[in-house]
Image 1: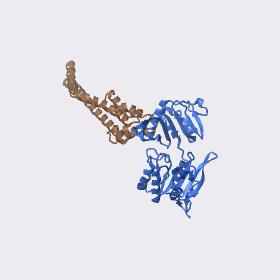
Image 2: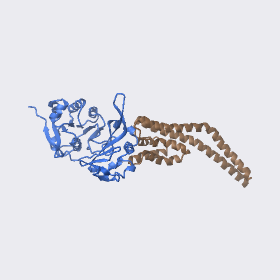
Image 3: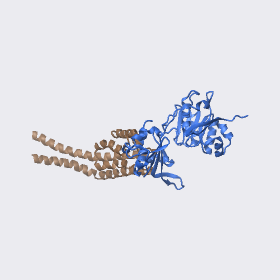
Image 4: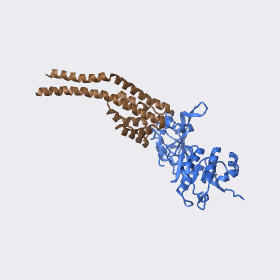
Length: 172
Length: 311
């Protein structure tokens, strides 16, 4: 009886691992979409409001879901304090933790943060372009992921189940 | 005002500017030119900033400014978003928190019609440190009121004799009220952000409790806008110039507003000649003419002339 129970637990654990990996794959796509929508809001503020980047962050905070809303408010207020630290550094510092909690890869994070290090344009169009470039990179990654996602998800669950069965065979 | 010029610099340069910031009250201008020494204009004399951040009289020890430092500084001043200051850069200056004015020069990018689109390769920065002199108008207050009624006044002055400083303090005292008259609603059209030193629409200088400031707006349209929207009892503008401004001024005066204004010139005759308008025009609008000038190197009110009474 204990053997059967143990076997079920091992199999269930492996299957759960497969499901967890599937949720990570889906979560990455969702997070990539969320990052793009944040950048889209920022671009809108630059395009139509001609606001400074710190102001943009404060403005869009009210439209963002937690935990991004608080992070963006902090960026705005930190920049208002004028401690002398550049926008890029403050932006990276404040979003770092939030991004780390999302199922993203380091390349995704870098693509999101890329625009914050490219400031100082006297032309609004140029600043917009840097934001759009970040969006573009995230979009390409998202589309790639979506294309492969169905198969990958099936594979993750399948591998989990098969791994469980294999372990059972080895243990028995 | 404290030492807020320090906030103009990015973090890594702030150590260099510590001493200068402590002596901010004595600094009129800070001149930064790419590849040239840092020059501070203090109490009418030129001083230099050393690499260690000390203020010295000898330019041999002065620190040379790198072009990259100017770029970083401008970016910091513009909140890492110079595109949002496009209009200000086109005009050649940015007003920052504290009311200081940062003038810039470099390479102009022109539109097809020859107008300036923006400036690039900024290689020259001139920081004009703002100093509000409260009490500058104390001497003229008894003359500017007649039985508690404010007279319309025109301040005539050559450049650098303190007409803006005098007007700013007049606005504050008229707005708050003083020993000679009750507080009045003042509308200020601050086209070049020099009077109020507004930053993001908020005056950085004390303009009085009943003052409304229209920042960065052309004087002509600004006066009409204020008349319609804020019903001012007094309209104040700095540096009268164009025909349109005179027309708007006449309209404000006809609406019963008192006028406080400044104009470049040596005396009334000089102003009449330069603007091609005879004395009747001025006397229809203004009751009092304050003529400023320098005596023994100090800026003073040389004369106060009343409107000529009709006989």
